Image 1 (cartoon, rainbow, N blue to C red):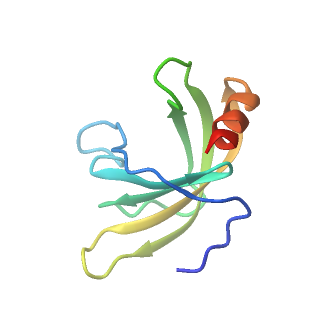
Image 2 (tube, one colour):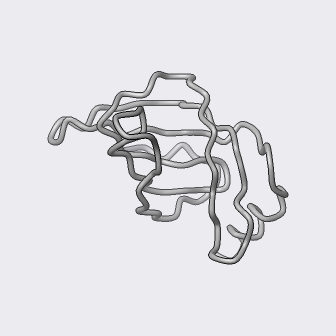
Length: 106
């Protein structure tokens, strides 16, 4: 898959918390960058859908709440799951500097 991100991706294999039987049940993160996150989901999430995400960047810090927008969706033929690219559009709560500092450390 072609990497179109402007910032480096880092592996981030973490389950996504969501409501049972909701759009995000059976969804995991795959990678994360300063500008977005990659997901694998059993659900096809519509393009341009805006999604609120709470990012817990470290054990001791406050989470950062961001609004992301689905930029692309691709079916993974061998599993029937979907690979999803989500771009961070807006930081709603938490300092931008926390996000920047997290990626500077990596």
